[in-house]
Length: 491
Image (cartoon, rainbow, N blue to C red):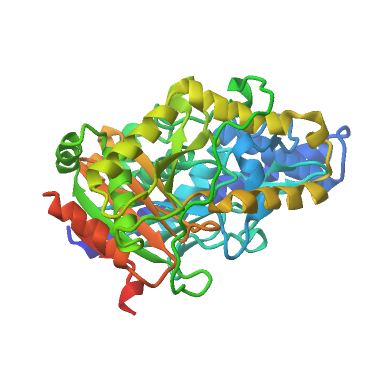
């Protein structure tokens, strides 16, 4: 069967399925209207009663999204999320992207249907942000799914709620790629991967009906819908002593793109070759890649000269394995890999030695628990909790700005990504992008899928000297690297 015939067949099946679903929904709504017309009890207007009936209907069809009472569910923000609404804006979107590449071009109508099926199952994403007296909070979003569009702008743009049906994420596509962009207030990379993989699975089941017949529409056993605030559960009351050091780091500067524009360079390489290179320095893949990135900053920007400000790389640490958590909300803290250029011509061996030492001292459960407890203690102090949000937001922004220049860049590693065996033949790779933050104009993300490590550098600076140096260093270490980009640097 040719590609055109296959697409025609899928579209025909999709239209038939959609027609059936609409007929079923129409009948359900008719029955609900009759039921509530006869119901003499219950609060609120007719419109409110119908909305409650609609919410009950979603409980029956998808489960665990609404509480079954018809009341709109609300939830607190986790500890890491409190900062993001206070500092987000056009220039600092706090939006990240995770993408999956399939072996076939994306059919947009089918992707929309897949999102319509999957979204009600994920309370973490099926919500909007509300402003209370003392804190922001989440409320269920009963609106139609956000628009699914072909990608037509730069990645990680600020999400304007009023233009996105009050949702805090967006789904787009381009050729064979599905993009999930999320405001960090919702969840971290692990939680976003749960959602993106389930969206992809559902899409593939719709495109390939044999998969749907065989597997059904249930969630994968690897997916978690847990809504626990693992920060609060695992912290220990502290005296509010600082759990980390803060100092001014070396800042990357240069000619900048206009606000919103971002350059992207992907480097793909065999993970086994990276492991072999790291083994020569008795380092993990993460330690090796962070060290190489810091070394290239030292070479490209400092030209191998001393600096009174250290090269400091922020490294997010997923806390789930340390505290046996399966939460779908944010659960991470930041550690810092620090290299101090104290003399001219320091070697890569010196850099990786410093990075390994700083990371290994911090990536212990005891230290991570200290940082976690420090962060949560500030939230739990009664005096701080009772400060109205109108005054709290400027305070949060002030604290953020005070510490914004404590890191040169961020390197995050999503680790080994797997998909269920039934879908592997359709999935080619994953990658991730980070938006800029104050003082950090260039960042890198990593992920590994099916033996290939993808290292992606995002930057709002026009110069590509650092990117060029980094990928060349990898090649000089005997690692085969293939590159692709979003084309910004060729304009």
